[in-house]
Amino acid sequence: MSDTTEKMAANIAVALNGGEWKDGKWYSETHRKAWCDAVAPYASEINRLRAELLEAHVYAGQLACSLRRKHFSELPPFELQSDLYGRLTQIDNMTCGMARAALGEKE
Image (tube, rainbow, N blue to C red; front, side, top):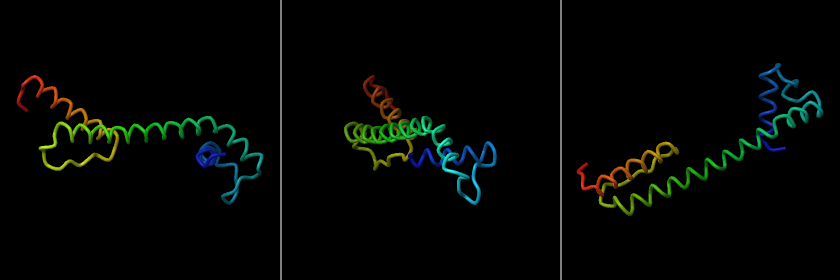
């Protein structure tokens, strides 16, 4: 069982009925396994989505840096945003600037 599965099972058990444990431990291995089996598909999906989000986060950073380097190197130093939404906003701003420049508009 993954660590995510174990944590989810414990948190859900506590939230639903005060837990299936005593003094921080499951009442029995059967209770633990039942809860873990119940949440395993969801934990697996959460882990998959976390990995996908990380991949998108890294790629957005690489894309933002590449756009900056290629099209805006004359501007003052660039600080990459730390979150995915911020990085996508930076990419959006740069591509809008590039589109304006292509149309001959002034910023």
